[in-house]
Image 1 (tube, one colour):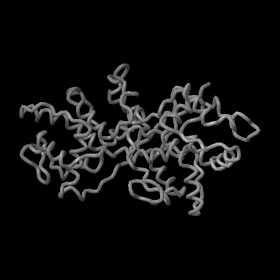
Image 2: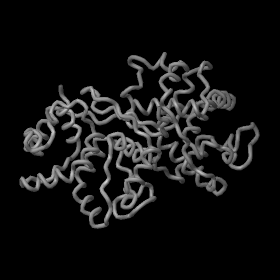
Image 3: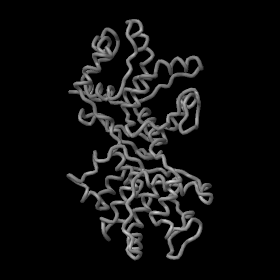
Length: 365
């Protein structure tokens, strides 16, 4: 049993019946180093500078199929650069490819650009400063910002916002203040402001390991599943959400829960978030009709429909997914490149949803 840091259940092409692949960001970090990727690429500034920083924000549409597309598109150039630098080409398994995706995604997962100036104005206008001092407690007993563990751990932030909602709702009522609802951008702005105050700038940051292995069970045990079912199911409802999104959603939802709202310890919140994230981070679903056109346009049939070429038949292979495509690229790609060059065929490059469409076509029964 693997203990995952924000486990990603890559539910690749669910309609085609392929098997989910768990990805572990911690394992991915090790793969990134062991396979030599770090010699050319960096993640959030840590690593080589020959290739792009893989933690650069590419938008919320970052999916396993997009990662596979990007790797396929740049593979010949990567192999050439590695050969010139004397770096051995990595041999990735499907599981290692999933781990790498989890690692790259986790770097983006917490990246919610905020503005400290807007955050400062929000801290005042939303009456936060009326209860929370920065270094010392104000009358009323609310903890000062300097003591907030949530400034270093977004999971704790979500837990504290959830657990203290009832107490804060009561405080709001005494002051005749309506419940303050937030957007993800507003919370991001507040965090950037609070994390960069002179008194808090030195607080060490980090993200504690989270496990989704028992998240589904805990989701039921806490009574969440009793409401979030049917039309209220969270599955497919909020794709590609960040931790800020989760925290805001729980904060805005908390007053509607009433006194029966369950208390969640940070570890329980980690499991709940891990479970919910596993429902949101889906591989992009493709269109098999468009995928058939991609198969023809990329001239895949020139090798894969002829056993004599030595290439395996891939039509109807329901075990294919974005991660196995990445693994195949690094294992068989150089030979595939030579074969296509011998046939006078260009290297296949993918745009937009083409990889997802191709997988949807290939994995049809």
